[in-house]
Length: 236
Ligand code: DC
Image (cartoon, rainbow, N blue to C red; front, side, top):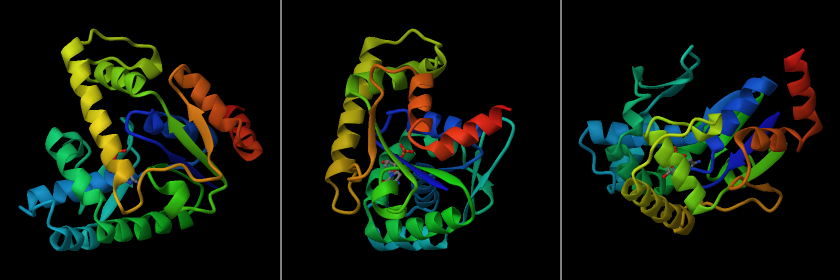
């Protein structure tokens, strides 16, 4: 089965997709990590992320793998573990132009479909239900208010995790900066010509602003009898 989860940055897609994967015995595919890996490879090779032809060459040549490990999934790009490096502010800046490049998207979407053909997958990104897997069994569009998303990200950076009920002290100026960055990225992701962020017509919309992590996970599983049965089987 294929489950597609799309939504803006900070909506909780990754944590929710990872948890539904664990409970329902699905393989988790983090497509954002793939675009980030291409952006990282460009920076490492001195390729300008705005140079469409050169970044497309990097995307076509790169080999991205996901490895399950005790501390969570690791991301390998051409055999190098880039799990931490793809989360830096430099990569964050470079990934917007890289992911707006249609030739890069074409290469990544082909890889994602190969991954999906290999079994039961829950994929998370911006265009999963609209472009990558338009025939997905379950489609979710997960959103939250910009303020709720900024708060979660800021707490995360302060060492907490609201999804797990762990709060952390947050500097209001830092939270404001996170909010500004989120709003800028939303505008970029939603207005680009190539696969802009939007909900598929047949996606179930979940607004997580006022929901706990567990409530969102439950809401996703409740969308499909197959997911419900898998979750129940996993608990036995
Ligand atoms: O979900 P994320 O923050 O890791 O995504 C990183 C970037 O990649 C973000 O700018 C949006 C882009 N992206 C995309 O264009 N399409 C996807 N399917 C996944 C991510």
